[in-house]
Length: 296
Image (cartoon, rainbow, N blue to C red; front, side, top):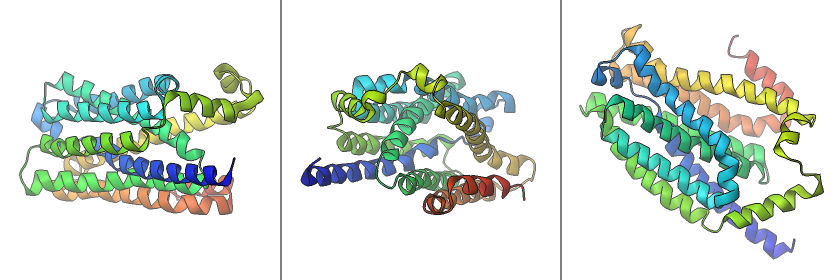
């Protein structure tokens, strides 16, 4: 590749990375509000559907992700994800009947899933991918730190209803459409198919071969199962910890909301820092330390 063309591509990739980082600040704010139970007058079990429905949307996104990339390109992925967020937040802000609310959270999860897979794959193919992925996921945590602070302040200090927070999210989702759409406007489906063909070469295999026949498939499946449990615990704990502090520890609404901020702050710092440390100490040692340290 000529030097000038390579430098131009690096500048374009850097701009797209910035768009991804803005988007990562928006996604975490879909975490649930403890005021839902009081507003809808429902039990813990029924309210838990709000926590589970994004997982359903995320699962659908995982199945359709490759199809979206192949047919729409990264531009289409950016717009589908952003528009899914916008539509979900509009519905949530209207505080609809509870079954509709569950569907809206599933739609938000669908948008998260489409974008997460796409942007992780995109950033993972850039130079210094470990560090950039750490920044990308760290900004997810930053959004999760900021959103409980804003939501808790709006509800407990300003006396606003829980759904008022989603008026802000509507504006941010609109910004997401503009920023990611502009950043990936030239990333068409044809460009994506060409890049996949160029990078795969003669060694490319079908999905079945990649998942079940290659030696790396074993590692891929183990990592997928690990992440299934890890992310499930992470999101569930981050969402329910506020309710736990209020109901079990009898904490105040504002103080309990700050607890979630501390949880996500630790996650954010870890993701920012470990992206730079892990390449130096090795993945195996880093994983062993991270897995063994919390129980200790």
